Length: 285
Ligand SMILES: Nc1ncnc2c1ncn2[C@@H]1O[C@H](COP(=O)(O)OP(=O)(O)OP(=O)(O)O)[C@@H](O)[C@H]1O
Image 1 (spheres, rainbow, N blue to C red):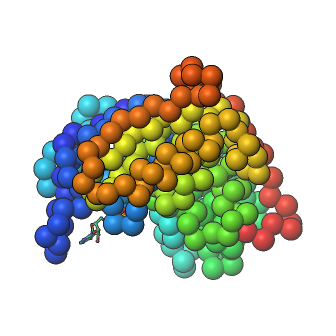
Image 2: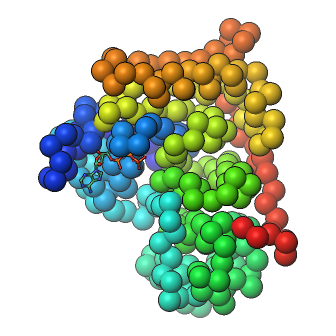
């Protein structure tokens, strides 16, 4: 599903300064884009407009050239804190999403099992409530529930920000693996420069409600967690992102394509599954 943002402006009723000003960007179907920017730069507002849970004050957003006017199951969202129903088991949480899209009860069980397996959760968690799970496992369950809606676009708002560093890397592996296997479009918000570098094809930098830069990620698709800093082009990309994030808010927006050291433009090959994410009994996250 292609997404497009045209001259998007959002001003909240309770705040004079606009959260977004004249933002234009295109997100091609099947791509993995990351939105980065300082706190308050408008990342979540932009994501919520794409989800259809925030309305533009000016301009518009489209999905496959149709205006986005509200929520739609084709665009699933994952938040920083899971939004699982705390009183329901993990099974019931996923079942609700299946029920919402009309899956007959008799067909649900194997689908629930498959979804939990896909996100790397052992089937024992079906009987447990969210409170019994670690933060990482709850986020996995939240992703399973999102996938139950069979979204074409996965909108992720700092989904791993509350997790410890190691769990975060495992969850990044999960998302890149899902993306490469399912071929969905991913729009991922993060504060974390290394997370942006590890996950993205394209990075949109927001500053002060404006699109400050569009950066094509030149790193090859294989990005093993511990070796990211060794990849050719990593230091340049990191420095560039750091500069873009800290520029004065009034500098004009720019579009940038970083080049590999050889000078040739980087291109993404067909993404490979980069990770396995078996969950064993020692997994504490
Ligand atoms: N519901 C709201 N009502 C009023 N103002 C809001 C609302 N949501 C966001 N804002 C304001 O809009 C601006 C952009 O906020 P937004 O949450 O989109 O930024 P962000 O880049 O996602 O920030 P963070 O990284 O801290 O989550 C901020 O000034 C924020 O205070």
